[in-house]
Image (tube, rainbow over all chains, first blue to last red; front, side, top):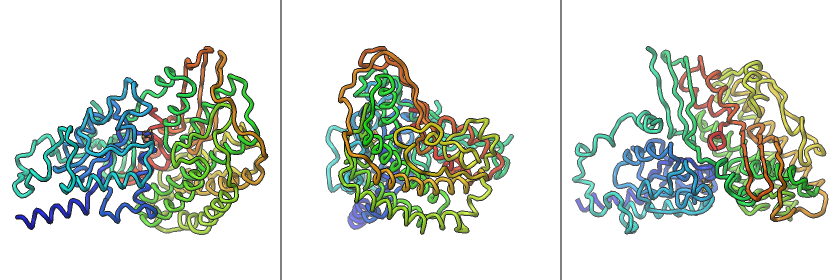
Length: 189
Length: 358
Ligand code: SF4
């Protein structure tokens, strides 16, 4: 079991998969994140992969100040990512609402909606900063770095034993098989 | 009853939240409707509660891809009301930035389109080319995105190293005409996915008021830079590429040709730029009045309306972006196509939902 656990730890550190959710961003952060995937910055050398489905992801990357319309879909997506998971706030928008603070259609900053583990401020942050933030998230995932204390975050990878976690006991609401539809319905309401 | 497939709002391939509901008969789409509004941040509401100087920073963040256009529009509207003159050199610098922005936007779009087609290699090629444009922008403005270049009556930074800009633009031009365009227009993979797909006829484009490369790929010669020149565009020489086919391939060709035209414009502007001052007043006083302005953004015509009552906070700021008018053409193009082509058809109008929703 010990061997398996250290294997899991290495795997989490070396190949975190990222699901990117745009919660009303201006696109600036999103295109810069896309740039991270391309030859000059080459995020994949750290084993970080951009994943289209939240069910396969370890890290949720959120950009944008969290608008009213995306808030519920964001929570649905958060529930769909299996534990252990790390939430990264990408840019100044999810960190502080940026210039959109005070707007009646914005419910952010992100830490009002989800427990945030890593902040990458900047408008937008440089791709290097984004990769550094993701590397930090990977370290948290592997348990090499503590989660920020003040967060009522999900189970810590150190205390939650992956071998005993039983998928059948998971909340049925969070394992809806129809990702797109579930998120879509939530967004429409 | 035919099944209705909802897709979104968090889409695996495209970056922005939006939702499409398609009704299918087998693989064929019989009806489609687009649900937008996920990016609604109330920017117009906020702009009417902040000062003119703060509004520049706010409006820059309407869209991170065409951020320069929004500050340019706002500055032009303020200039119109306050009667400010823009120095010649500043006009040329505005053209350089606007065209560099068009370059990076079109290359970004080309990359995303290749990704959707499933042509990974070309996606990477487009993006490494785009990095060179980002270098130009960073060299001039200090930022990769949200350049903070415009202010009422001028620009904030000068181009201090024109030689480096010229050299970079020439490389981009060479790679685009030598490598990118032959592959994007001639490769069998690209042709198979794009030729004859998502056709928008000239009449439909006209009836829906389509703008930008979408209209130009459906045979409408329509470009604000040509029909109502602003800044230094009337002193520069460029072509407006137009195609008649109206399919996805035509949109690729139009945008690819526009990349070359933008390179041409930057070269001319940098070479013929006069010397002189670049800036206007830092805190302009805006008298009561109203103004409407139009410029050609990478995606088409942007329209701004600004009303002032003489205080330092605008009364009304109205932003109408190209995606707002182009979006209703998507159901027209999608009906009758296979559902697997839908993401590509949608991407072919180069939608920008953050502009659209504001
Ligand atoms: S932090 Fe800045 S660049 Fe990023 S989404 Fe917000 S406004 Fe756009």
